[in-house]
Every structure is written in C-alpha cells, then in structure tokens.
Amino acid sequence: MVRLRSPAPVMPVIVLGLLLYVGCGGSPSTPQHRAYSGVGYPFVADFNHDGKADVFTAPSFGDSTGTMNLGGGNGDFQAATPVPLPSGFYVKAVADFNGDGKLDLLATNCSSTGGTCDTLDVFPGNGDGTFQGGGSFGPTTDPLDGASALAGGDLNGDGKEDLVLVGPNFQASIYLGNGDGTFSTGSTYSLGSPVQPSFGIAIADFNRDGKPDIAAENIVLLGNGDGTFQVK
Image (cartoon, rainbow, N blue to C red):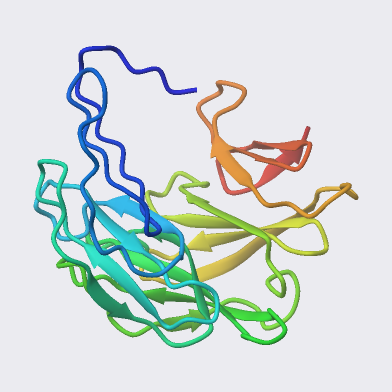
C-alpha cells in the first residue's frame, strides 16, 4: 500500500482512454482529457531524458501501434504520437537492456491467432521517445511459449538487466543479460503445480541478505547473488 501525505501534491496518471488528474494537495483537480489511444498496458518513465515523466501505451494484443505522450512536467502531456511495432508483438517490460543509458522495450513475439509466443525481442530506445527495430533472442519452444509472467532486474550483481520468465509449465526461467540487448539462458526452477496460471512475478530482497529474490505463485526463490536461486 502506498501512503500519501497531505498536503503534498499527488499526480497519478490514468491512461487507457481514461482521465488524467492533477492533485493539488486536497481533492483532485478537474480531469484533463488527452487522446490516449489504444487499450494496451501503460509504462510511465522518462523516455526522452528531460527529467519529466512520459507515458508509453503499448499496443493492445493483435495491434501494431502504441502511443507516446511526452510529459510537460506539470501534470499535462503532449498529444500522443504513434509508436509503430511489428504486428503480434506484446510489450512486457521497459528498461535499459543494452547499457546505452536509454530506455528500451522488451516484447514477446506472439501469434495473433493462437497466442503462441516464439521469441523475445528488444527494441532499442533512441532516447527521444522513439525506438529502433527489434532484435530477437530466446527460445522457440517452452518455457517462452505461452509465457504468462515476466520481470526484470539485476539478478547476479553485474549491473546488467536480467530477466525471469514464468511459462505454462510453471517453471521460472532465468535469462542473464549480456549488457548489449541480448541474454544468456540461465537456470530453470519448478514452481510446482499451482491452481491457476501465474499472472504476476516479483523481484525483491525478501530475506534482507542484500541479494535479489523471486516471488511467483506461492513460492519464493531465495537468491544466491550470482543469478542462481534456492527454492524456499
């Protein structure tokens, strides 16, 4: 739970075609309407390095165009500009995957008919709210096929963004970042047989030993600090 102290300004961003409220220390102000097209998942970050929060709305499944709303720093945003992506790509994460100081997109390449996901792709950011073409990596079979959850973080302490992915076989697969937008396959850990598929995964230091751990389903994987984990 996030607790907000009044009268500090509150500036939540609500996208997906809804409203933007700018808090003024009390009740929210009159909602400001913006043309947030699409119904994909929103990512809030500074995509153009001006110190102001922007909103990238990923394409909805089966669509091929996302939108970027650059922030003005006062709770308002510029009109949406289209961000084209190949059809069938579903954006899962935003981070600097290639170590150039610019935010990139990580997407799964999925069939628009059966929902089958074959590869992971990184779309390098240009640092101005636009992105380059994707580069594929990752498996062409399970565990990526039908992946239901994905999270990123530095799992082995080398300063590079790593990934953990949960597939339909209820296994957590580790992908260690090479720092150039590509990844090496690490270990795989069974999550047992849950009642329903995983729709969430978290990376944090749950046992306060200074090493990142993974929580998925009803299992916690305790990190060894080198990209490997112990099943709790």
